[in-house]
Length: 263
Image (cartoon, rainbow, N blue to C red):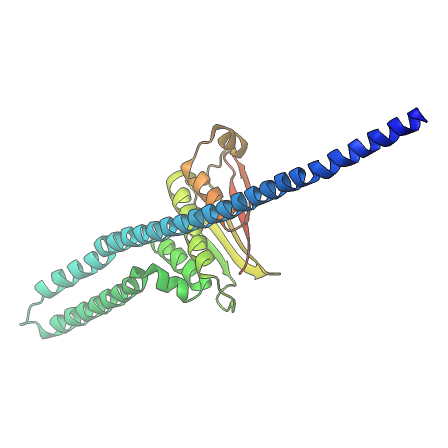
């Protein structure tokens, strides 16, 4: 009998402890949940702020790149055209009407070319407006400037001109990605041929760039954290949840494939 009473007493004590401890555990759980929820909200806010900061940086870099391109184009192209126009006009001999007419015609042609170049520069001056015309046009504009250098053989397939969907924030980053890739090729690749392939498929935008330059050891570059340009490209792709596939072999060139959920 005493044994049964002891068991009952133990059960009562255990039940009482459980009953008393339940609110404590419940309070601890609620506090833990609220703390995690608050941390999650703060983390989301921090990620949003970071994304906005990166977007602002991308805009600034695009504007800087645009201004540098304009300065170079004004100096090397428009300036040269206007100088030739001046020389041609100054060499006109009005006493020889036939030659004078030819030189005046040549001068008018040079002025027309200068006006055309200035119009193109006016479009480029507003980098965001280029993006607003569609990512296909924005990418093509960059390729066109590269083509004007006459340094590379370009193979281009751009299937993004008629893309109906848009994503202004992603478009700006994608434009900056192409600029960064082109900049790296110019600085480091020593390439002679560059291929560009841009297309949209299954809600994803693809950008494929290949060149026949000197190449490099990609794995060693990642381990040594070398190459600020490559780090910048990787960081921007991560910002928009994209994927990067890079294949490079020393003395055999480099191929970059970027896959981005779009829009």
